[in-house]
Image (cartoon, rainbow, N blue to C red; front, side, top):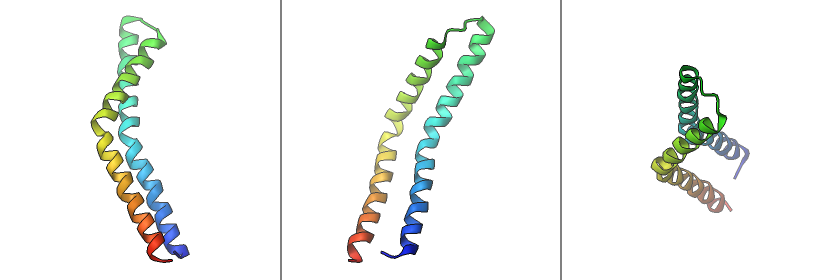
Length: 88
């Protein structure tokens, strides 16, 4: 494995981390915004409600998209290991 392959796989790994974490971050941001608006309208300022709602939303998102994320990481790992061991 030469330097260009290492650089390519590193760049691809960083993009993969960004793409895989993006749905969870977006869901947490939307849930936080929703609870903030609800709290402002009803004057409820309890932080446990916001954290619990975000946790529930992110857990549901993880259950729905977990197989996609896992298969994407597994395919990337297979490509990296095959590139490493084929060039010995």
